[in-house]
Length: 387
Image (cartoon, rainbow, N blue to C red; front, side):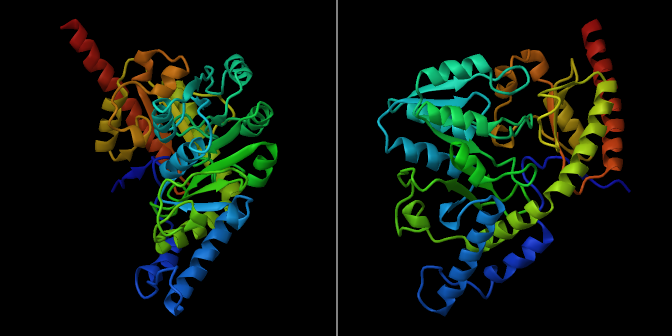
């Protein structure tokens, strides 16, 4: 009997069973508030401290550089709004292919007097060099460029970009949510190059939803967006979600330990998929090299992506037509349009994002189903035109 196949790991990943087991005591008998001074509180405080150390070690940071938050969106908002609040309004430069949790706070800051410039990507998804150099000449105060794009999987050379931005006087942030556990990630090295802050999240690496972190250079002045009891060094008040953070810490540790082996497996499967897609006449978006090993974003000319995603779902394959966080927007992908992709082709975009539990057999079954659906949809389209 055919089992449903999950190909949407850039949206979220299954919870690692080992991580789930580690979390369970903190959903039961270990329920203390980490700020309390009795034994119940001290037990959870030790668990919180361990989680912070695990996250820090996984990304090459110091524990006191880790600010725990509820998700990547909150971390991005904390950096952009919190840092902007401590600066006079100036130029904020963000990639036009950023996640909505960067683009929408940037739009809010624009209404508060900031000048927002959207950095244009080239056709391969990397920042267009001429536009980047022109932006640097304007001396931006803040810059945010995603390390790995959630739709295309395209990787930016954020170390080089940050070094140039820093020389121009900017504070540089990168959303590294999709990069963690899939490509090498070291905040100490990035920070030395000029990256001042970095966003990571647990549910993309086998951890729980609702746990993430902003890794930041302590010299950057950030205004809290949630005030109260002063948790997280005063940067994010609120009683900590201990169970989720315990899971986040362990998930980071396990994802980094297994990264190299997992990336090789994912890359082999992605290449197998894209070889078959080429035979079907598909367009694969983004640089041929320099992408996440698990991500393939493609379109079959003349076939609507939303329609194809719905049919694949009914056939037992979970894929996406773009960012999960933009699922209410049924227009062409803004990322693809920014890359200069024709709107009609962009409407056909489908994203397959693999996980280490996926198999070559699943890839082959997917391609078989996709080929049959494409043939059927094109026949239906031909009939409609002839009618």
